[in-house]
Image 1 (tube, rainbow, N blue to C red):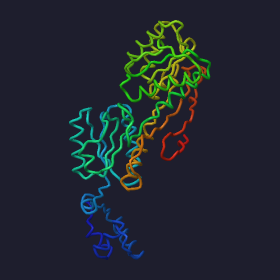
Image 2: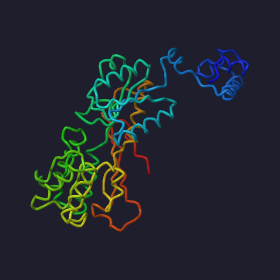
Image 3: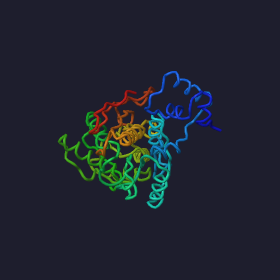
Image 4: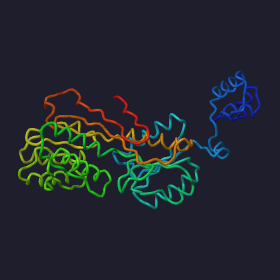
Length: 360
């Protein structure tokens, strides 16, 4: 059982008021020697402050809520890890709720978290377009991370899908490809639309005519990518390279090419998006762009904390660009290469700080 404030005060030989001033970082002056006695006593007794009681007095609980639509999504855990790692640095705790894509569960989760006096809420991979009336009325800050649907909204941190797609296409163009197919994601999705928009704009800016037959909408899944690749192979002349909007569809496309006797990258170069773990396990390994999930989580937590501290206000959509990983599937590297793939550092793009990406 944790020691009480009274026990710390008794061991330190000070009043409860003095002990509280030291341990709650009260601005009231306390002599250095006295402060050291209190801190030493607290460490000896393994004293932990009662954050709930403190929160009732100060309206600060050092706790935020994290609502995820799907904890089993491959992208959710690294986002939450980024959030929690930043919270650990500032001595905050995250309460995690899985809403399972159910608006009713999400509304109930918001009410429950607010009743527990969280200082803010982060929505992870949310389909929600705006905060609930209850959240707005509470005046608690909030952030969205990796929103999947709808138009850009304030207080959201998302991948720079437009910039990431440009990285892939500029690379394929530099390799000499001019007929580049695109296996697109479902266009109701935020990320799918941006990747398709960037595909269209990048090719147009390089003076290439857009061939609608080279764009096939799919469903993010392996089977969908396989079917889309079959359709692209019917186009004449067929593409020399294909950009799939995610790695799973790219893997399906590779399966179709293999089943028809075509080689990657000798006959058709192939690239993906997301940098899923499996993209590094294939032969040939897949050229792709990483989804900066961890950094998105860190950024969202940092912005929320700044809003809690009153040092930041509502922000525009924050876009963070991933990295282009060049592997054998695009033809830029020999298939027998065994050491790690090249990675192309990119910029973190948003309108707040203009910060540069961490070196890895």
